[in-house]
Image (cartoon, rainbow, N blue to C red; front, side, top):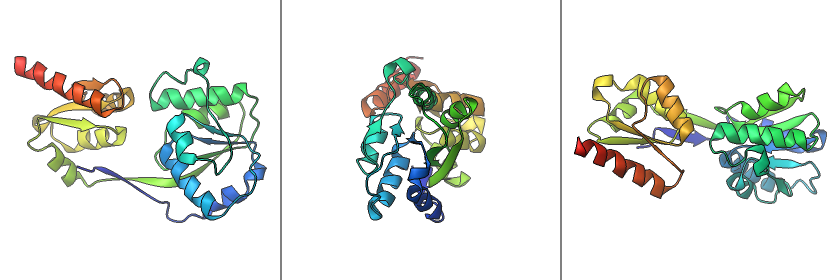
Length: 223
């Protein structure tokens, strides 16, 4: 049941303008494979020539999505906490790695309209200016669809903090099935919203999610 979909920005002028001004920046940062894919498509449509600005990504998935359109992509080493897991840890680790590498302002940050602030906040706390350019939007479903998703279910698997928040404010407490969160970030958002997760998948993989669902249902069957 799709409760969150993604769309392009209303227009691409900000993204295209930022790509045209790459030489004015001392670093480019991305924390999302979806943002990387959007930037890669726009950059491929208007070849940029040789890019000399350092490009940073939080992890392998984001680096792969970006490809080679902006040249070599750097990633934070484990010593910066890059393997700690979760969006929050990834953004903070990238900020620490960029600062340790001597990154100077200004920094160009391609992101979605609903993004986490750990990366830009970490860089700004160190005195760097960061230009945030939105290259995709996250659109939530209507409340009625969220209620239909919960109706009659034994368990709901939620992989987005925003979807967890939508469900918590839409589905009455007396009608809530068991909740399985994918990862600690989504679980934390669900708890703050007032619908704590009954189980949390240890890894963002289909096998891990299936294990969490099976364990949860067996637990309730035993009771």
